[in-house]
Image (cartoon, rainbow, N blue to C red; front, side, top):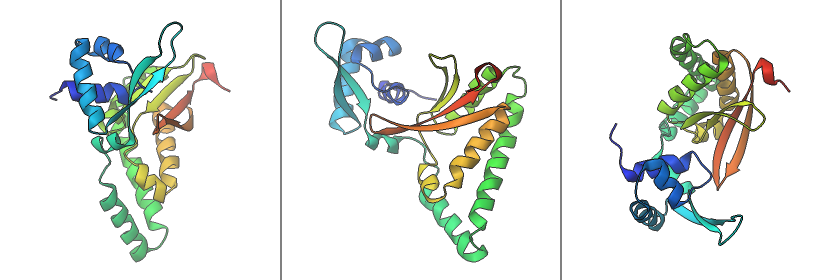
Length: 210
């Protein structure tokens, strides 16, 4: 896949709550001024905004973060067409049709992912592989361990957001799919970060059950 500095900046910011030009430059191995120029242009286009992050000493640090407008740059699964199809199915076959179709979709998705996770021997290995698979689906997923030692699967983008707004069962089915693939209980949390929605799945391994 072809990458450009602009795309790299957007990807790094998508996976964070905001980064300074210095932090972006270090992550991308680019000069300060090279990164700064791209950030300024992205801010002018409305894809970034800034805030000041307090430092232990000295002036607060200028931080760049994505705006909600940047969501349009990521996969959204053709929500309008999908919603139209589900609503048509509901009119023709009744109100139970959309949930049945969505259930079938997530079953098929789980079955396509399962063989790719089969060689993993631990929950963490499966979670890291699943993060890569979900990223390829547009979720911009990362596998992380928090300060309490809990394993997390974090979605920085929600391709199914509009679909879930109409059919609440989407979130439930997605969580059940992840539980099935990882073989353990998962707790789903939603938070607003810098005006954008982030979904975190807390993976309750044997060592970290609440």
